[in-house]
Image (tube, rainbow, N blue to C red; front, side, top):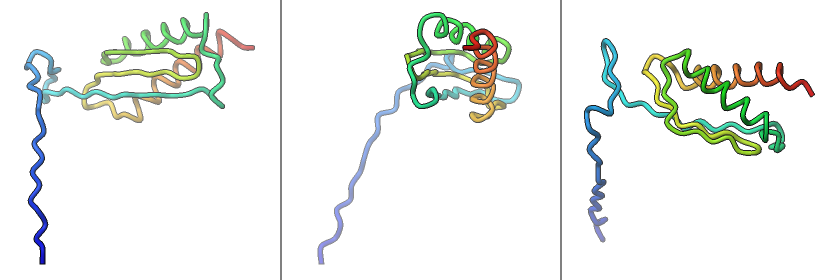
Length: 112
């Protein structure tokens, strides 16, 4: 009867300086979300003026809440966002806020 070998996996942890953490009244946090959403049928419609409009809408939406945009890319058929938020904002609420505002305002500006 062979005994299973003991496997030890050591993961390197990178120390994050305390200055990089965000502080609230009752919490110290470093929450990051990578959100990706695509256009319907992955059509390449996020180009030119529409892409610039979406970019400014996302920047305005995150300014009205306590959301830090760490990285963001608007491609032809999808949007990548790396966001840092406080713990009180759920990921689903965050996606709802950003997708809802960008969809509403872009549809109002470009109705064709």
